[in-house]
Image 1 (cartoon, rainbow, N blue to C red):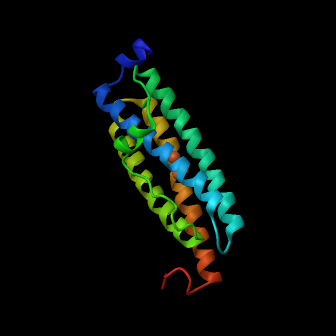
Image 2: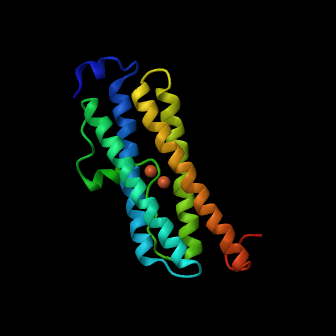
Length: 169
Ligand code: FE
Ligand code: FE
């Protein structure tokens, strides 16, 4: 823990740690959802989808590191058990039970939208109270916005290729 680093935080540090640990749980679940999805993916544009999912998984792992470091700086402990990830998560986990490209895209777009909302809230919460966490929240938010956009673009390409296959108008 960094003593002065913790003292300068202008909000309830326990509340901040709870928000950071909830994001930490989301990132593990997002990592796994992408990592396993990339192994199971089937269907049109599979190669592109797998490449995108593997890249996103790697970036979710980077987010985990940023969050774990910030939690430790503030004197907290990153969640100790995988079981607690589901309990503390904001965005939950959608198992890739039907791993066709269209389904995986929809599930992961949904997860990214939830992540965008969560980091937007974390940024708003810390904007005037904790510049160090604010900077991390904005950095991750930018990645999540890019993730959503990457997946939506792939979904559009898929629709152009197979107009009837994804249920879009
Ligand atoms: Fe992330
Ligand atoms: Fe993401």
